[in-house]
Image (cartoon, rainbow, N blue to C red; front, side, top):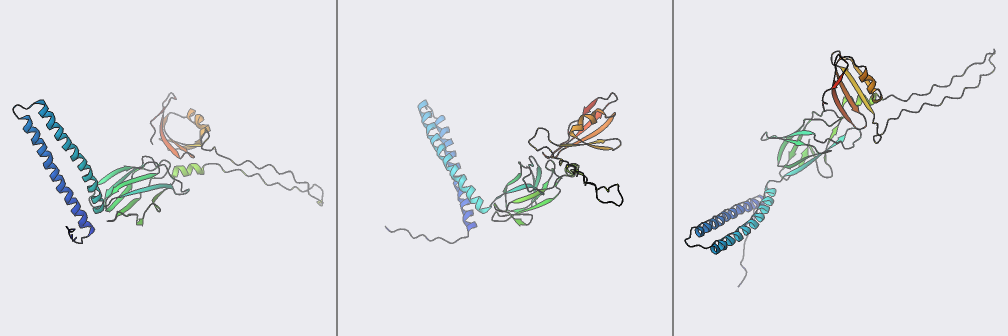
Length: 313
C-alpha cells in the first residue's frame, strides 16, 4: 500500500494560528460532551433498582479514570492555546530603570506609584516600583501612557508623562526610542531642592592666611625681617561616611505663624528644641548621605511642653 499524497494549501501564519485556536475550541466542545456522558452514566447507575455497593464503586472508578485523562488533555490544550495566542497577540514586558541624574547610580524607588493607561480603551492600572526597577508585564500591542504619581525619597517629583508603544511583533518603544536588553528604558531622577540646599549648606574648608612680609625699622630699609613660619593649613571639613553611627543630618525649623526659618545640624538639635517658644513649628530633616528626608509637626504649649505630630513621608 502506497503512502497517501497529502497536498497542503499555503496559508499565512496568522490564518494557521487562528485555525489552531479553532481546533482547540472544537476539542473543548468534545470534552464537554464526554464529561456530560460520564455524569449521565453515574445518574443511571444510582437510579438502578438493585444496584450494589460494588456496582457504585466500579462506576465511580471508571468515571474517575475518564476525568483524570480529561484533566491531562486540558493541560495540553491550555499550553497549545497559550502558544497560539502568543503568536496571534504577542505581549511584551518592559523594565524601566531609575538612576541618579548626576551619578548615574541606581536609585531605590521602592513603592514608587505609577499609573499606566491604555490609550485606546482608557483603562488604567496602578503599578509600584520595586527597588530601582518598574516592571510593566504583559503589554499587548498598542500605545500606553505612563504617569509617575510619587517621587523617590530625596528626589524631586517627576511630573513627566512617558509614551510606550508595542508593535504587532512585541517590540517596545519608550518615548520614541527602541528598548531591549542591551538598551533598557531609563528614567533619570533629579535631587530635590531641599536635598541640594542641605548639601550646599556644608561649610567649605577655611584656607590659611598668606604670610605677611614686614619692613625693618631702619631707614633706608636694608633688609626685610625673616618671614614667619607659615601657619599650618586648616584641615578640610570632612563629613561622616554612611557606615558610621552618626550620619550627617541637616534640620530646617520653620515657625508656622511667622514663617521664620532656622537651619541647624544634628549636634545643635537639643539646643534648638529646648529654646522653642510656645507655638506651632514644622521640622524638616534631611539625611544627606542616606538620601532620606522627613517632615514633622511640632506643637509647644504655654508650659513649654513639646509634642511631635506624625511624620509626613
